[in-house]
Image (cartoon, rainbow, N blue to C red; front, side, top):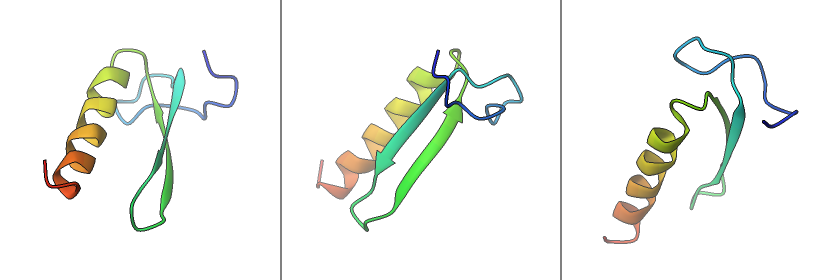
Amino acid sequence: MDPEAPGECLCGDPAEFVVETYWFSGRHSRDPVCERHVAEVVAAITKKQARRDGG
């Protein structure tokens, strides 16, 4: 569990993790997610970054 995790996941459950992403545009995001959705969020971010890499 991440002690810095803010309130809740987008699904409404308490957030247990914060997924930090550094985007190509220089933007940085910190997304609070619950344990149930962490794998789904990481997979979606990885897929989006791969598309930008031409994959």
